[in-house]
Amino acid sequence: MSASRLSQNWQYSTIHNCACRVIEEQTLWGQTVCRVWLPNQDAVMRVPRSTLRPLNEALQPEIDGWRITYVAAASRVAEVLAGSGNAPDGHVLLAPIESSVIPLPHQIRALSRAMAGDRVRYLLADEVGLGKTIEAGLIMRELKLRGLVKRTLVIAPKGLVSQWVSEMRFHFGETFQLVLPEDIKTLKRIVPVTGPGNGEKGNHDPEALPANTWQMFSQVVVPMDSVKPLDKRRGWSAAQVSEHNRERFEDLISAGWDLVIVDEAHRLGGSTDQVARFKLGQGLSEAAPYLLLLSATPHQGKTDAFHRLVSLIDAQEFPDVSSVTRERVQPHVIRTEKRRAIDADGEPLFKPRRTQLGPVSWEERHRSQQLLYEAVTEYVREGYNQAMREKRSTIGFLMILMQRLVVSSTSAIRTTLERRLEALAAPQEQLTLFPLASEEEWADLDGQEQIDVLLRTRLKALKNERAEVKLLLEAAARCEQIGPDAKAEALLDWLYRLQSEESDPELKALVFTEFVPTQEMLRRFLTERGFSVVCLNGSMDMEERKRVQEAFAKDVRILISTD
Image (cartoon, rainbow, N blue to C red; front, side, top):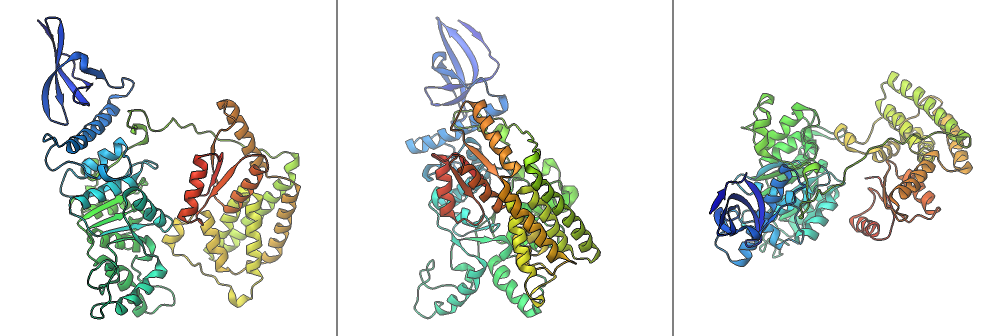
């Protein structure tokens, strides 16, 4: 007999259908036998060497560990289904068994870690595109299956609330009630009519609807800014502000939630501890025993804001900024980077990304576009300087957006100039100096939403602005008649070049642009040249978005998105 102790390496046991670590290898009478440790059973077994298979040797050791965690967790689920008594008590994961979604390894790991202790209060900080919503749904389902959660509140930016309702229904069979700002007053009127004592039944309470509006539904999704507390609002009395805060904030916080999930949670950090969103975060952190904060960019280079965010998870653990250290934060954060993400076969989940800047040059045929750009730039420069002198920062924002619009496309600046001219033609008493959005809300809007807010506000004109806008509008219209934008032609060249490089005439491409008029211009431009195109933007509901995504997944070659 001969024996040799190997460096501890991982193999796959075909007998036990799981990963194992080889502890020792022995040869007896010509047969090689290995002693192996099985992590899912926490047991050491003796198996023939011929029954072991190598794991993917191309993977890095750190990725091996993630794969092993996934395989071990999957083995535990299999043991439960088979009725085995070897699964560790108290840490069997049930959510992956009954959900329609097939979790990826890092999502299994996130669920396993979240459920490893009694205190389920975490910052889920996976990079963009790794499925934090799925992780939160798995954790919610696991808590529900264990009888720990009945009432769940989801807080998300207004552009994501419909997506949460859809994904919870599709992946987990969970029905969430979407409550928009305009719904709150309506629900408030319903409560006295169908409340206790009148014989009517509530839709979630077998006896009657409760006095607190937010207790009418056991699972709710609500936009973040519709429920934050207010200190004041222009034109409102103190009593109106107090009533608003009671209906939208105080009643929400006191509605008896078991689990609170906040998407894009970094927005709760705020610029100071006095801003409305941080006050909302403080209330939400105390509203339920279980808390999940979701953010791909929780730090954003702002230590104070990050401290405020993690203090929502555990105020005692993070009493001040100096308490925010890597060692103290790590137990409260679950994060996966794209470079470490793998699929169920252990292969990298994402292809390497190549970033390349594509310059766009004006040629002689683009002369009118160049002149338009220069004219708008001069209009912006003069308008911005005048706005700053007159302390009209909102007009300054409009000028900055005008510059971005003319860079985006002729169609984008032409459409906006038309709307601005319409506003300037309105009677002076209908014009205003004030914006419609708060500072916090403004920062969260994309370019298209910002320009929509400013143009709806009907801002008062600068000196000679109406005549200047008319001239610019005429120039933009002439540009569109002459020919396509230089950037659209450059995009077409890139698509043809990529088709050639990839040897794929049916190559699919995802194109991002900031403004809807540019999106529509590109759709027409590419469609006229034989490409099949679909568009995605913030004005679409979930059904429209689903149809677009399905079309792009099948035969459509180009998806143009503003999201």
